Image 1 (cartoon, rainbow, N blue to C red):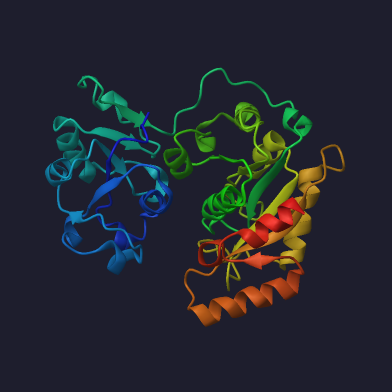
Image 2 (image 1 turned 90 degrees about the vertical axis):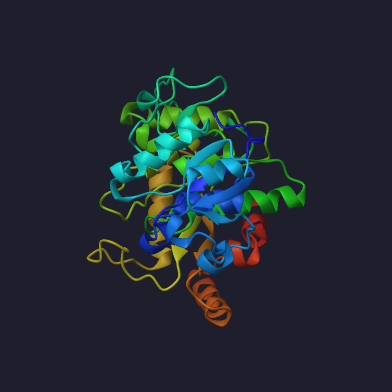
Length: 342
């Protein structure tokens, strides 16, 4: 496991051109570990601000050797290529990093630990997408908790559910509430140092794995559960175990402003927000057999818009759905927090 005190380097080779650096960008924005550099030889010497718009001072370097000289103790694979497999072209850099004494943090489906059976004392390979031990079947036990449990739900994949959830926790912390974040994807788990790699858990145990993690946060006033996928997406099956495992008291709908169809499956059109919200509420309650959970606000991703366009999009969405709406990254999530705690 990665200790929060360990300085890390992010492997981001080619991520800017391919737009596949979601994991690394998440660690840069929200990670607890100090990022000492980013490896991307195509852009060595350039700035993260210019490339990604992130005001981070970590330099972009060309090699694992430079990362080691900058003090990195672990190399985090910051790229999520299609299919989630480790390309062969990465292996020379990873082999070199391990030979230099760096640990590896791997959020992809391929397991790297078997490739490196002999490591130095304290060196490790953390394959994040590994099913936890001692799992059981979900029993709906989270419904007995007295705290508020917010599940982030979406209109598509990759619309900002994790980001909005982390911003909601930050707002809760600033307000003096005790808040926990249940990470359910590789990026969130690397940021938090714990969680449920939901897409690596067998379906029979998926809701039980979520339930166990939610119950471990029972002492918090607020528990925010990272959403995955979408009920609207034909390739997504994650929402139901998240709902059953967390028994949410509240839902926050996440959407990318202006998106009319699925990003990669354009034959699927997005219904009106009110219709989507009702769909999620109906599934969450399962004909009243589970506690009712209401959509209390919208987290609108406006990262692709200018300030004026973003403000207009937020205002239009808020009027259409008659619920508090904001871009948590631009504006903070206080508006959503108020709706949850009302």
